[in-house]
Amino acid sequence: MPIYKSKEPTKDGRSWFFKCQYKDAYGEVHSKKSKKYMLKKEAEEAEREFLRSCGETISNKIIWDDLVEEFLENSHNKDGTLYAKKVNINKYGDIFNGKNIDLITPNLVEKWKIYMKSQPISVKSMKKIYHCFKSVFTYAVKKSYVAVNPFTIVGNFEDNPNKIENKDETRLYLTPSEFNKFINFVDDEFWKFFFSFAFYMGTRKGEQIAIQWKDIDFNNHMVKIYKQINVRGLKKDNLFIPTKNNVIRTISIPTKVWNMLINKYKADKSFIGFNDNYFVFGDIKYTSMTTIDRYKDYYFKISGVKRITMHQFRHSHASLLISNNVPLNVIAKRLGDTPDVVAQTYAHLFPQKEAEVLNVLDKF
Image (tube, rainbow, N blue to C red; front, side, top):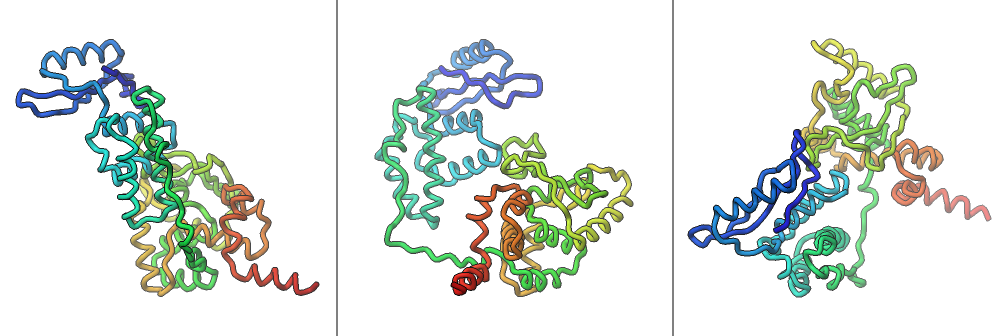
C-alpha cells in the first residue's frame, strides 16, 4: 500500500506515515492514519505489523477524504490559499465524502454541479470552488491514483448570459466626509487610531495588525510593511507570513496619524517588559480579527454611516488618492500593487472622475 511523506515533519524530523482501510472483528470499516516515522522503511514495517494485527484489509484504493488530506499536505500554495481550499472542500464536498476516488465519475460531478447551483453563491464563486476541487483530482492523476480527472471532463460552471448583475459601487468605499462622520463617533483613542490608520494608510487588515514597533521609522515618519499575521493558515507554527504579493514597502505616515501613533507609543513604553517586538495595534499580542470587526460594526451602527468591510477601508484610501490626482505608480507603490491593478480595481470608485472626463471633452 502507499506510504506517504508529509511536508510538515515533526520537530525531530519524522515525516513518513501510512494510511489504509480495514475491517475490524465486527465487520466495521475503518480508516487508519499512522504516526510519523523517520524512515520510509519504518513506516512500511509499521503498516505491515498493523495489518497483521487488525485483521482484514478491505481495499488499497484511496477514498476522497484521504486524497484531500494528502493533497493539502503536499500543496505548494501559500498558507492562506491552502486554508481557503480546505474550507471550500469541507463546505461543498459532502457528496464525495467516504467514496473511493475511482467511483467519483463525471456523472457524480454533474450531480455536484446541480447541488452547487442551488447554493446562494455567485457564478464567479462557483467557478473558483470548481477549480479547487479540480486541483485535488489533478493531483490524483499526477500521482497515478486515477487515470482521468472527472472535473476536467465535465467542465466549469458557465455564466448566465441573460443575468445582469448591478453593483452599487458607492458601497465599496467611504468618502472623506463619510469617514469624518464615522470617526467622530469613535470615542476610544485606540480605535480612533486603528480606523484612521486603515483609512489614511491603505494597509490590509492582516498587515496592519502585524506591525510591530520595530517596523516604525521614527526619524522619517514611515512604516515598513513586509508581513501579515497568519490568522487563517493551516501551518499555525508561523505567526507571520509574507504580504499578499510578497512586496516589501515602506510608506509615509501623515501627521494626524503620526500624532496618534506617538501617543500610543508613549503609553506602551510604560508597560513592564515593553520592547520593540510589541504590536502597534495591541501589546504583547496583536488585536484579533473578531475584536476588530465587533468594534467596527458597533461604530458604524451608532454613526449611521453605511457599513463597509475593513478591506474596503483600503478601497477608500486608494480612491481618495485617485480623486486627488496622485499618480497611479505612486498609489501602487503605497498599496503594494501594480499600476494596472490599481487602475482596474479602484479608478472607477469616485463618481466625480467621470465628470472630469466630461469637462475635458466638452472643451472641444
